Image (cartoon, rainbow, N blue to C red; front, top):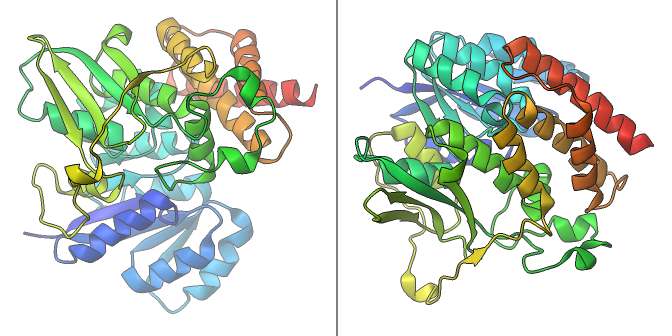
Length: 385
């Protein structure tokens, strides 16, 4: 069997580095054809020298020359920016595009990869949050596979394997509850960046960790699940599960439920997306019931964590609303990490942005891109005021 060529968009992040661990474990099965990063070029250069990809992309222009100089003498093309991302996903040697870019920047490369008939291993949930209807229509049109990498969506995907003809009654997306589980709004008035970045179970990048603390991450996952699995909003529920062992559950029309379980480790869903439909033997740590004698579940608190409620409202409204939600959230999280806004203020600002951006019922790709641009400007203006 010939090797599968993998393009890793976001190779220096948490998902990207673990994906490279999977490639290291199966060198006769996978080959890293493309590696990309934003500004962590020191790590990108190390990765490029180890894996010898056909191309690397640097999205931060300030670091382009450093990478180009470091890779001189090697047969590795060095490309820049969004144009570079769009170009490399079309390479003939690429079979699967693993999109692990953070934020809506992953949208255009995903569209072009689908149009180039590449399978997508999706860790960039914002692609479906921003333009889920459009993306899934393209997946169907071009006959490619959309393979979820998020642990929750991978869990649902695994539970549905072999159940294609059995109607889903409901899915339950599990949430750890983040560092502030059980807190009320009064408890969160003085939350610091350092406190919000201490996730109890998962090691992730700063943006997704803050999203987890505010439950926006779970709201984005609800939207992603709706599009991935062709569900109505009433078929997607969130349940808090502090141990993060049950990654998600599917309930079928006969009342039977299936759950996918395992320790909090992203390597398994990454591997499954790359090897699907096969399951390859590995040396990953195994789950032991004796280590977790109690598994507990709670209702999500959407009054305290209003971002989850805003996500449901955006999905219910449809059109470009989820695109606005995502753009506003990316801006406020960045502002929170820079100590420019408070933890609870993030939801207030997102809600104000949702009220101010023009509603478009049936957006095109250009409409989504313009909505994203305008929503970011409005959010920044609200923060300044």
